[in-house]
Image (cartoon, rainbow over all chains, first blue to last red; front, side, top):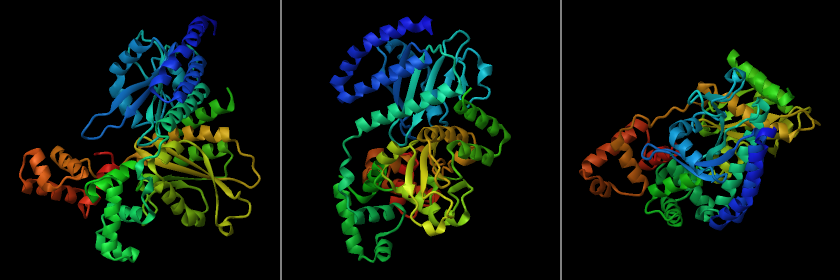
Length: 245
Length: 223
């Protein structure tokens, strides 16, 4: 424990300065996440941490990794890591929820661990990556660099749980203001859902005991409220916003 | 080694045996639960029960509120669903007459994501049992680790993967609210070609309308 005590102390000194910097650009409470990350870093005996936010990839555009938060002075380290491992990180996030251990000192110890072991080079330091995939939004990784603590399943699941909390908090801050779709009424949502299921207005009218004109009127008003140009775009927007399934 | 560490260890050992239920029983025991129901919320349909992956709930319960639960989960707004992922919540069971008297009236719901799959674990407890919220949070991650190792659980049958690049391009413009004429102008091909692409998309996806094809593509995160 003692040999990395020094780096922790400097970390602690730097943190307030760093978090006030974050407070300027973002919500003041994002700064509250820093102490949490520092505590986690201390638990695993790492020298630096980073919180990456990941944009999902679609067939048309590739996924994107951005560093949302990091310990101060770690820019070079984090950028190099993202550059080197972005493909792997993106692939892992959308295929598996298990933590990743880069270059563990004692690989045999992880035979009975759910963690995924990745080796990048014989003399590389040990890093930890905790994937968090909350859904369409709120996806990312919490990373710890140059980890020196003895890793076991208990510590890994503890850190992973804390990683979930941090990213969830961050998402709550970012999406605190609800989207403009909240004012859609039940009938409009119902009609949109049925159109998305492939039904025509006539069939929807029959199912809901409405005239076809009423159905079209609901769809029209939903389209206006979603600021879409036609009902097809309204469907796409509504699904992305999570108004319909 | 404490109990949490050894629980994860045992679960990992169970995986190599290849029996899904063995691990689910371990998870159940660690949570202090009596029975489990594991479902795919993203595969939910009211026509059949394929979305239920595995369960040792009494069958009448599965029939009665299994579907309703998953349906409710599938309908919550995306932002809320993301905030609830991996977080255990409790729900009262509203049909006590169907429940054997030795079951607790509250069940625990844990929504989680594993790979591309959206899952829901629902646990039933014995009456008068003291629950550990701490353990249930461990369970959220443990069950995700465990089930993600079974490709047959978390795989998605991607009906849209055989679309061509041009078809996806057309579909994404339709999703932006463009008409065939506008798409023809944007991509620089004739209107009939655009319509041919769209017909081919609807044939491949089995969608009855353009709206349904766009809805499918957005759900599967293709556009």
